[in-house]
Amino acid sequence: MHGLELLKKGNIWRIGSGSQDNNTWNTQLVQSVFHAFDAQEILKIKLLHAGNDDFIVWHYEKSGIFTVRSAYRLGLNLKQNLTSTGASGCPDSGRKLWDNIWKAPVPPKIRVFAWRLATNTLAVQENRHRRAMDLLPTCSICGMALEDGYHAVMVCTKAKALCDSVRKQWNLPPEDVLSYTGKDWVLFLLDRVCPDFRVKLLFLWWRAWHLRNDIIFAKGDALVEASAHFLFNYLDSLTAAGSSDPVIDSKGKRILSGPMKPVVTICRTEDWVVPDQGLLKVNVDASFLESNNSATWGVVIRDHSGKALVSAWNIITDCPSAEAAEAFACLEGIKILRTVSDRPAIVETDCLAVSLAINSSTKDRSVNCGTYEDIKLIKLFDPCIQVLGVVVCGVVVFCVTLCRPV
Ligand SMILES: [Zn+2]
Image 1 (cartoon, rainbow, N blue to C red):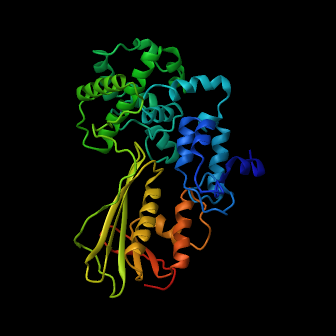
Image 2 (image 1 turned 135 degrees about the vertical axis):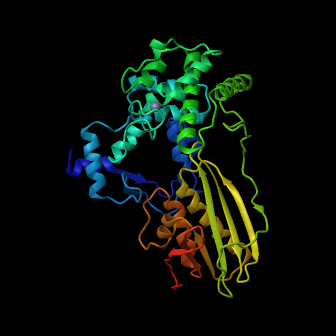
Image 3 (image 1 turned 90 degrees about the vertical axis):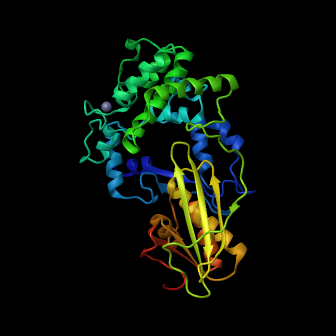
């Protein structure tokens, strides 16, 4: 595949205003048309201001701008038939198989995890190796085999131990039924077993992945027995509540629902450079948790003496990425700034991508274009706001200013 045909494969529409009335998604319509996962992803996209038309972007670059490199990779992937099967793109015959995931009575985060396992889009070593050849595809925990999804959640040491441990209390399919059957093993296996087994397998794989990540990214001290008991309690609490949306998360914390009012506190200055007299400095930051798409933003506004005028933070629900959270923090920082003062201000973010996007003179085509265009619009009418990119320790690594050099 090449030329125009390849270009068509990589182009997508970025939605403009979406609605002429109130600039919001018609949630009910989106949820009724798309599968749960797709609807959830669509609703996370921030819409542009009314009047902005939909526009075409290149799907295979974060920036939305076409590059020969990504087109070459796409062509190669299509040729090797490596592109994963999308939930909403499968034919009716396959729809029933996907329903075993999307209609399973388990929490949404477990369904999403199972979808990633089924579409081979987890960050297992084999997939990472495909993108960066210098990485070994071998499992970095046991070193015994290639790490694909099946190995990570069924074969590797802790995954196997977890499966053995939960068998003490849960009735699970016999070992031979759980054997690898090819690249569609998840869909195939879920379709072979009864609904009760299906739910337990989904829970089991999800927790096995948690144990795997605990070894690779954390201290690796999560215990198999404790994980098994966690799963027993988790499933029991769901069954008791009769709900697929539990109120307790994987760390046993209660999930907050509904918008919270921003919390305002007083802060102190440390390793931070005061702004010139007459200027204010707005420091913004965000944190992002990929496992449940939750994020928080924080803002501190200080004057030339270092005195904090205001600080605030809040939660972002359904946040698609770390960059989206950082961009949102920046937007909130600017909004709060203008509620407390009209003075010129410097906004500092430690996210390079955010400051570059905000200070770029070209139209943003990334998935965060809604937030970026909002900030650009504010800056257009309020040019006394500068947005700078800084590193965490306070050293300015680069600065791009719209109105005047720093
Ligand atoms: Zn392993």
